[in-house]
Length: 176
Image: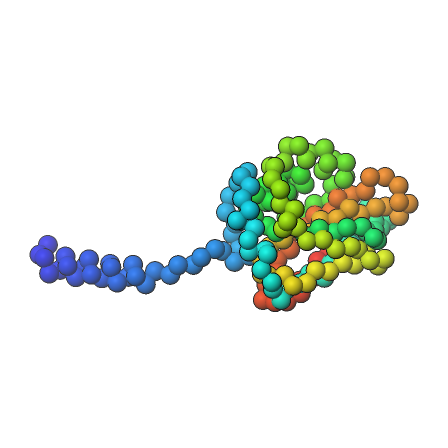
C-alpha cells in the first residue's frame, strides 16, 4: 500500500474516532453495572442534588385476604448504587422487589455489605391510608423500603422493598 492511501485510511480513522459519542452513565432505568461490595460515598453524590421528581407511593401488600398496612410507619428511600444494589440482593434476595419477613431481613444484615450510607437516605411516614410521598428528587433509581403490619397488628411484619426510577421531573407511582 502506498503512503497516500495509507495516510487517507489513518486520517479517516482519526476523524471517525473524534465523532465517537461519549455516552456517560447509563440512564436510570437502563442496564446497570455489576454490583460492588465496596462502599463509596462518591457513588451517592448524584442523589444529593435537588430535583423536580417525586414518588407517590402506597402499600397494597396482601397475604390472602389480609391486607397489610403501614400507617405511621417510616418509609425510607435509598439511592441506587452498585453497593446498595448488592446490599438489597443480600437482604431481600432481589434488587428489584421483595416482600420478606422483617425478622429474616434483620437476620441477613450481618452478611450484607457494610458502610454508612445514612446521610443519603430520605425518610417519610406512611399516613393512615397507607400512602407516602417523596418530592424534590433528582433523576435516578431508588429503593423504597418499609415494614407493613397485618391487620391484627401482631407479628414482626413484612419488609417491603421495591426499586423505583424518577425521570424528567415527573412523579413516579409506586405500589409496595
